[in-house]
Length: 638
Image 1 (cartoon, rainbow, N blue to C red):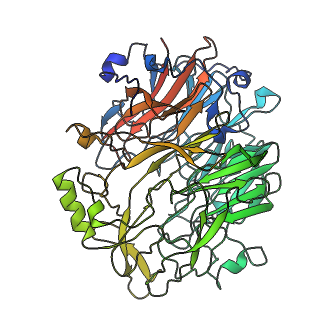
Image 2: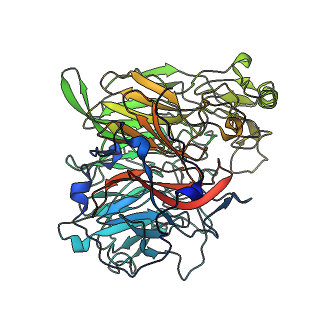
């Protein structure tokens, strides 16, 4: 790749503006501000902003404007502790002149969008024992005609939904019980069972629509039902049974009593709403347990399905199951992207679903018909006793897969270092090699892609003017086998391996075992389904220090696009924030972060100065990074 590069120096040298650590007394935000600064407020799924102050010609001049700290741990930055801090994955939300962020402990913090100075914070665990910590990806805003009634909704890692007044940061007492709605009783979440809300809910008119994180390591547990609640009172208005009950369409895809108290089949990521058509799109996860389905023979609707519901009533309009009888943990991880596609002389209102398999599905979002066609193709079958994998799986005719979906050969193993090659050969020689839908069985198996994708919850960004979809992907395999459990165990088999239950096909330094690139950024032409360009995303820090670059890296965190022709993304585990040329994929800007930015950025016009800001959370930690931070960083032109 060629382009104009700016490598920013040490982090300390960048912090010129005043610190935002001091808190100010609450003042009412200007809630009339979002309309002119958020040109597409009803379609946040596209992650596109019609802003053009920052352009390919001047983006290299971006500098840090301000930084803010959440105070999540002492010092704000440091080494990753033994118990890895879960990734700081919040995407800021502009609420008038406030920028609202969330933390891994479910705190909600409002910063001045212009300066980063903290206005208020709310801790849902205040006065009670904190029982959990998990990635948290942000809030949703209900903004009615009377802006004084605007409400921020945020979930908690222990399964509650809180309603917050943006002006004061206080709970809205009329919602639920004094501003808090406990979601657990309604889905039979029992003591000790995981159930939490880690992604923003969806808003349609006066409804807040909620999914949740459910258990993946057990077969039975809380339901993954999607529910809608009145934004003012918290009263339930409808629910959709993601595992159909007797008499409901799809119930016949479950055998006998396999549907009862079946957990999983949940929306743990973000939903999307077509406000004009009154449709909400649910990207559903797999049925649990993730890797064995002998206790649930059948296709298992609506697991791994994109489901369109009437947003006002919860009635199903259409669905497409993208994995039948999942035993690979191929959840639909990404928010569905609503975008218009010009094809065949007409404009199709489309919905794009990205997947861990690296497959891109594009549907007419009104009818559910595939835009580029889908083929059911024969796939390998499991040899695990009692397992009945589905004989075929759906493949889109176009676009082509964005990652490896074929078996790897010994000749294709990594050569980046002798140490990595040796470790990877050791794993490879103890396993059989497979590609997409190769089923782990009684013998150790390597298959591509693994549970990290392909695409992840990071999703994608769509530029409607250029007709391009931008997607960041991981190319990392998985390795494992199925181990028989003792008599009387809840499941007959569980995934295992000498390298761990969720083992990935990488070395002890987390360098993937196939030759790079291991992470890429892609531009897909939405009119033709062709790949316009694809480039490595990031550099493995362990190798860059030895002069080995261009490898791409595993990445978590999405992209945004702007009208001026830029794609902004952090995501990589090399603690960098980058801007790419939307037309060519050239890197035009690169800046160091205090820790890797495993989050999706936001860009907006500052309420008072009118400057275009680009803001990203840099938290590191999680599965990838040796450094953690609690920093929010805003960039702007000088």
